[in-house]
Amino acid sequence: MSWKFFGWVAGGLMFLLLVLVGLGAGDSFLEFFIFNLDTDGVELSEIRNPVLGLSDEEAIDAFDEEFVLFLLYSINVHELRNAPISFEEPRMEILVDDKIYNARVEKGRVYVGVGEIEREDVIVKTSASEAVKMLRDKNYISSSFRSGGSTMELVAGRAKLFGKGYLSIYESVTN
Image (cartoon, rainbow, N blue to C red; front, side):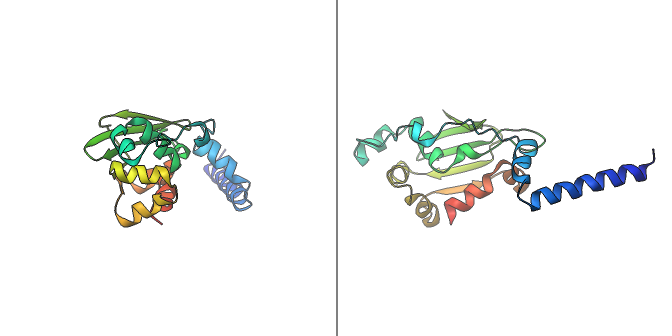
């Protein structure tokens, strides 16, 4: 067989992929085969909001990984996916006042720990008081990021951030 034949086959497959995507039938194909998306994660409704029953002062004093976890689910971090081709999982650092937390997403589940993490994709910075406001009112999240009370620094390259799904989260919290 000649190289010309393989060129035609590759061209035909690309055309078919474009048609599927154009018709909307390709979304599932892209998520499953290219982005390796697994939707068996925990729903926000399955996690108890840690600020419930606490005053703002009590919530700020008690702020820990559980608060970070709920906040990350509130901004849909669980929808992040492994990078195409490398399958590298999403990783982030969250700086709350003088404490450093880390998070990674594995198959739709968010895991939060204390301390720095290597090769983070983004760094989220906020204060405990801002985080408590965001946990009390989900609509306040974008206000906090727009006003500068919270920030999200994009560390990884745009292609990696797009592949993992960060750019849509960044847009939703900053717009």
